Length: 207
Image 1 (cartoon, rainbow, N blue to C red):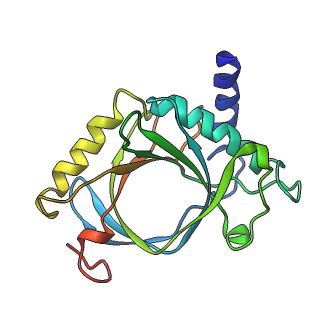
Image 2: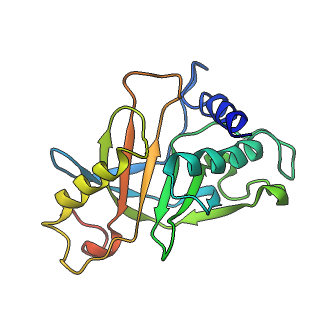
């Protein structure tokens, strides 16, 4: 079963940014501050379908399990039996908890479906979610996002932000955004996202 899940995920993620020849839709944002190792972006309202995964501390396993459910939704397991456009990135939000962390895997809904997406089949246990306009600190990193490297990247972003955030600022969750097909072995793009809306001036002014 585990091997089947890994194969399914490899097939699933290969749809993202593959050789279809068309532009892959992504959330719109405005860059409002840039430094050598991170930037601050202001995103407009974003619509997602999300799948919560509990019971494992592994980022990789959670992403595989959650996106397997989202893939089914994208490819017809919904109220219209419709196939939705492939978008990027696939995001995994890691949420601290008293025991094992929870993981929320998200599929970005294209603009055409953003307001009234087809309802997911109930057995998938995925939810429609809207983000309000917010500000994110973003750090890019190459290669594959894995259990053994994401903590280093989030720690680096936290360190870069430390001179701007109050010492008492608590960061209880972060997001890993993956933009590329698993078939792409070089030139890969991943990002760490931290919501800094609550730590910046009104309107998310530049730091």
